[in-house]
Image (cartoon, rainbow, N blue to C red):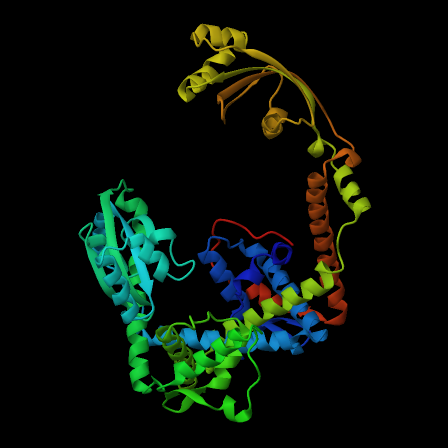
Length: 560
């Protein structure tokens, strides 16, 4: 849906590039009551330059026009009241909370994660082998010990894994297959890399996720890529591993600082209520009285997480639900929900909401939401190409829609792919495919085929695009088929544009989608043009001319 908007407005909607408006930054343009300042334009240009997509200086006008069109669409969405819609307000609240939470976690981790050359080289050496392992995952140490005891007692590991592993957690039998180091999260990754094959390991503490029992089945050499070709990937793997450890430690420090604890009996209270609903087969959590809503489940310095809040999040469905048959799972879920509140409280205490960078990101995400909502309401919903419009779109370019009607070809199928490649190389230098096959001494029969299109044979249907591009006398292939490798020489062909009515339904639907996209693009352009009459646009040409852009880089922005 947003793809057309992005094409029409250049890569601005998706990137959220506008800088925070500084009151002292000169105003380059006004769109209604909204200002586009020099900082806005320069920040966008600098980011595009860094990504290799900066246009030359003469394209400042194109860039500014794209930003003006974006502002027009935001104003149009606000004019329709879309910014007062409850779904927008919910999105706004959630987005602001997400940004505050992310900023708090980022600061608690204490700076960027550094990755050393030795760490990259070590991981690359480790990946010279891979291990096949089976895993059992539980959300309590007690359950992991029970699973471990069953395996030690002689019950097949795969059977125990199927009993304990949550649905969808791992393949049947807990067999995760061959994995190279770096594929799994710590500490599981290190255990699988270093474990003695055939030996049981566990319970392995992988909090806050849960507990593991592991058995490595076998280990084998792995053919990897050279270090330089994998450097970027390995760097990111090491960074993510270290970041995960840093985040877990930071959250632990935060829990201690806020004295966060799940109240005794809180998890049992929530489990009893939710499982009681399930037992009644209603599937919906009932309403709570004011007193019930206020029941505290988790305490932290300065607040509590209540039963009412837990119900709201469970009803919302946006968060993963705990396993209500596991006390540990519910404990972790309640603790995570309270940690979320603490992170927001920490962000508010540190006044992150006043940060211009965070406000810029929030504003642009909200603008993206408004633009998409406006596009859906005013472009997507009212515009859908009908049969006549689709037929007109098809008829506009007969040459592009020309298809094969009939062809005659010589074909030979070979078992050996190398022989097929050699035949393709030698055939053009001989009178024809028969002579080339005979000269190569392949002993394969060359057949003649006449094909009418549309063809009921899926192989000839799949070959049509290649044969349309092949001139009579030319060769095509080799094509891998179940029977072998096909090489063919096109002897003759007849092409023409079939009538729209004769096209198969799937082709008509594809054309309808293309025609619809073209109509929507035209409507979007017409809408943005008409909006200029509603929301006056002014540009200070002198300030724009004096504005120095970053040096041009490869690539260019196109006019919408």
